[in-house]
Picture 1 (cartoon, rainbow, N blue to C red):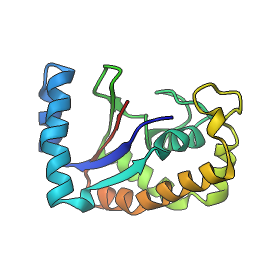
Picture 2: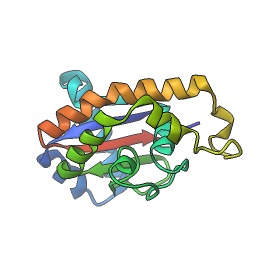
Picture 3: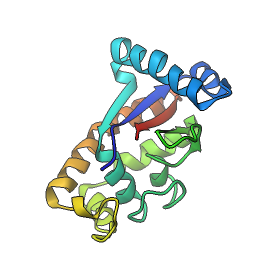
Picture 4: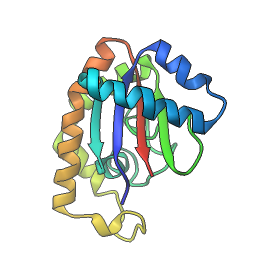
Length: 169
């Protein structure tokens, strides 16, 4: 199963610095040393944890698969969609612009539990990466973490901030 996913609400200055690094290793170090530690200690309202639910959530919001460009905007940008700014296999970083964040926030606010469940049922039971986890319990877990992120999206949109999705692999 997937590892831990987190959403960060970033200002433009932080995004410019994050994107300025020449290597993925330097970018990851900046994320871990500066963004993660600072936000978790000083700005808890600027991040939302998704635990391991991000994988099932992305699949439920798209076409049942965990791919970078599947599904339709804005729901496909909640997790993997957006600008991929890290390219090694040990981590995921996907950046969303303030304009995209506004559209995502509007979409997540309207998404019902039934909507998410319909998407969840698009995940194929024989999917070698996720199928074994399909259950009502897993859906409820996915729904809980999704609902916990809705206020985060609304706040990031209201403040015209970027959102960075990250997950360690």
